[in-house]
Image (cartoon, rainbow, N blue to C red; front, side, top):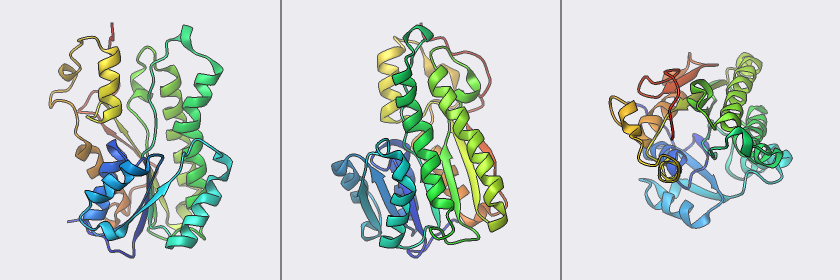
Length: 257
């Protein structure tokens, strides 16, 4: 069984809901110290209240889409405050459908700021050897099966997630000589508030559950994989993308109308 110690500090973004909350709670329940980052302070408190060891869950309120160029300094400041990081889970993100005729430069910038640029700059802070514990430290970022499925209306979102996946593989090559591991996971439709809101607004009765032989994924299905990749049990795994999609990756287009 995977176990952590309070001396092992993990930074988790998007920790106020969905996958980020699930990862933060699971890490804490397994014994780790967690720094939860999100915009909503009250929801971060709710996450802490769900932890088995709330005394080892610390709240950092920040909008990661603002002042993106300062995010490496943000990571350094957190290291000075809490100690060196054993791992980082980048779980924040947005998903919006936008057919070609609705695409604008502002929409693309909004998507890439949240789903790509902020991730890359946080990773830059983490791989700075002054900010991590060295050999055995690990980072996991959430990509998406959308990078493979090529569904209509997902050009911006799929582009940001594809870019994230490629960049993390490049970073993994750069830091492997220091014993630092970097991987991504690519979930499909998981029962999170963001996904369920998207179903309510766009699907119009289409049976998405029929795509998945085991039904829609649960938060724990993804959190289990992320926590494993952050642990020493995954010490020989780096530069990989893990599909968590009930076998639908690359299976064709999902028709939303």
